[in-house]
Structure formats: C-alpha cells, structure tokens
Image (cartoon, rainbow, N blue to C red):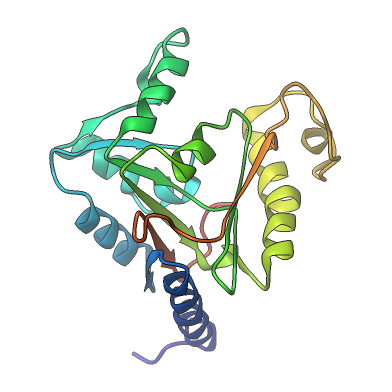
Length: 212
C-alpha cells in the first residue's frame, strides 16, 4: 500500500532526526507506527531486568507500560507505592537497569528537551539508570533547540498540568505564565545534547502524533 504524503514526510524527517541523534552518540531508530515502536522497545529490555519510568503518555499510548506490567520484569513501580513511600521508590528508580521516558521536544539536529516538576524524570535521563529508553511521537520534533524548549514550556507543560490540577497560571489559562508557583511542573529543564556514555540513551521516534 502506498504511503500518504504525511507518512512520506514523517519517514524522511524521521531518518534525518535519527541520523542527527546518532551523531550525538544516542542509539536511535524510526518506527512508522506505535506497534512497531512497542516491538522495538521490548526488544531492548531483556526479561528479568529492573525497569522504572518517568511520566510518559507516549509510553502508555503505545502499550509499553501495560507490556512491562504484564511481562517478566522486576518493576520499580512508583505508581503502585503508598503516598508515604513514593519518594523513596522514585529514588530507587535511579538505580534501575532500564528507565523509560518520553521527550517534550526534539530538535531536528538531535537535541532533546524535557521539563519536570519533581525532577525524578530528568534525573533518570541525565544519570543513574544503566539504560534509558525514550519514546517520542514525530509531533515532538521541531526545528531547533529554542523551538524544542518553547514547545516543552508552552505546549507540553500546560497540557500536562490539566491532568494534575493545582494553582499555576497555565492550568487556568492554558498558556505558560513563566510562574514560580509551588506546584510548578517546569522546575527543571533538561537539555540532553550528547549521550554519554555513548548508547546509554536509545530514542525510538514514532511516525504518529503521540503524547503532549
């Protein structure tokens, strides 16, 4: 079956971004569908591994979270922890063999941007877990680093905040207010411009609109 113009564009852009990521020592691949993305992610995680995650709607949407919960893995599951245990579990996640995350923005030349409230997700990406798997829809790709940061702050964060509730301006207006609210979810902004050690972070770029 012939590809649509949008699918053709996504495939070509995906190949460009994968090449850019590899030039920065990330592992990377392009998958045209979420089903292919799920298959690739599970190929990367050996059975019996300790697995943890930071918040990622994309990982949920492709079925990765269901797969690890139903698979033969040792989970460090912050979502199943009692409220008084959650912080300790999130710290333990930094010692996982595999850490699953999403991305809030990816530049065409291979830089990855994530914003975080508690900091556990960006901490896991930056250091700790032996391997990091980032799953991201093609909608996360933008022209440059400035646009990736802007996307994280003005698109991803205001949408995410609608899930969490609270007092931030973006919850009320849908627009970033560059706030200093106690429940701000833009407390840390991580730019991952080079993967060190090489190959520790593997990016699965999927040719569908996924996540926020």
